[in-house]
Length: 184
Image (cartoon, rainbow, N blue to C red; front, side, top):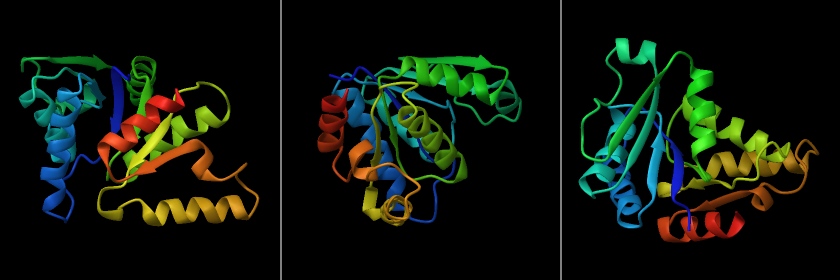
């Protein structure tokens, strides 16, 4: 079973008011399954929701945040039960530390930063720089356009095989976690 899951997601709540509650439930669900949340240590938006859910569920949270974000007060404050925050100098260090700690990667709804993190670990996987599974929790079909675009890229010959061969996509947390674990 996966014990350390890196989750990439929005630092904002987005326009759909139901996303906050669903993301909080994911954090709580990870805690209930004994899975440590590894994330970018943000205190607001969906990042704040998932970490609060994990904390409220009695889980462990490992956050990595660059110093400039702490200075802008974007981070979750250290001191919550089960929360460990590491402050690093750069975004590159943040992503490297998260990738090292995680056994798998999962993206929830988010913006350009979420996409950048997702594509980086997925690219590393396709280049055999790691063998860790990568997935999308497709809450309310959020990732459908991306999956369709990636299929189009594969059909055009710019991606080896189908994205379905290397990317776990699903809308149910239990299902996605089971398939990520099986792909390890």
